[in-house]
Length: 257
Length: 294
Image 1 (cartoon, each protein chain N blue to C red):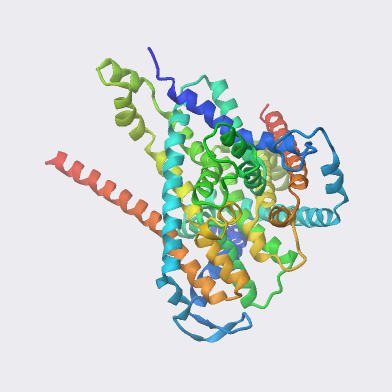
Image 2: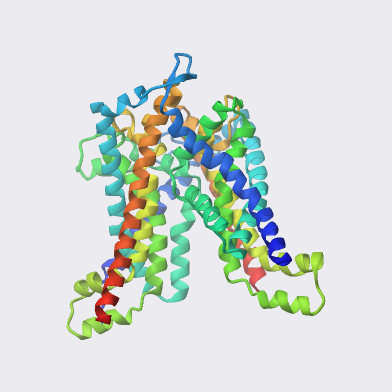
């Protein structure tokens, strides 16, 4: 049987297309030449300049607060939502499912715009608090859907067996539910960390003056700043993301075994 | 009876937190957008008290219509290109061995764990006249030196495709993975050509994936802001840029809201089409069953 080679060749081209910009960016972060077209020799000066920039550190601090708080809150709210959606099949849950799935598909700019108008209307000054409220809002849906998917292949026989053996209440929750749901909770947490770290639009619309996060800072650097320093920052960001993904994979694999 | 009541209370207790949160921070604010689009604005950037249609006066403007058409055009083109590239890739990956499939999907997804802005910035350096692509094309004598590659619709489309392609490949692959490839062999044995069976058997077989890929690409593209802002510049504004301009530069919230309402309507169209298609399919099936009964 002979297959056409075209899809395979196209796949290789697409992979190159996807990876090339990122590889060139990492290479340029060590490039002494300012405009990254020619190799001007190896340098760490862009990293030195990056670490000397106090605004970067301040916005990193804000980012960690925003991502930390919104992940914890959306994990609690999203898990409860996923649980409710799985457990009950009532009319309320149909509406609930609707209100949870719409934020998954609408463009970010609509969510940013609506939150901005909401905060302006109730007279709430824009600050890091409004950013956190916005991030929780878009993270809840993603956590809820992740938990719901995990619950769908949840084996209730294990719970029944544990009950037969006398487990109930707190023991049942801690010894049975939590370990079984841990991969789902972990996946939900990872997803909301990634989404929160990656978000620009909602943050841009809900951030007041002075409440700069890392993405806002990167944006203003791209518009007005020095390119090689962004390359250095991007490379660090990249390494951190890969590290996070690797840790996640290790943990989830161990959990499965 | 008592148990039912308990279950009911329990359900409301677990549903309450997320439901209330999304009601306050999602549903009400979205309705607020539509409401404020009918309000007046004052010169200080506040929302006035009266009701008016003046915020909508902009939408009959030629320059706005041009932006709206550009937004629709780029969204359509982006969706079509992502499908044209994504379907063969999903096909190729789904035909590989299981171990290869997982590794390749990982290779496609991993770059997209990096920050969205960083990926756009990477293209901005690549497309710079002094950048890698410009230099290569000049060297190959395909373009004269110094040709601007940035700040045009082509650049916007390129980066849109780059940003959305993996999101199209994911659902396409998920559908292709479940496809029974023996069907293609059977069709070939019965004399159908490769291309023919690809179109008449494989494409309908992964239609669920094609529909979700279309929605995943088309809807967010309608609301693009960052990509046209950073690689498109002022001559390639899309709807999202106009909204941001009204809000941040002009401090005119009602006008920004009116444009957002237009975007909400544009986003609803694909949903309505999907629902209509599903309904007609259903009624088609029902009439087919009825025909069989007779």
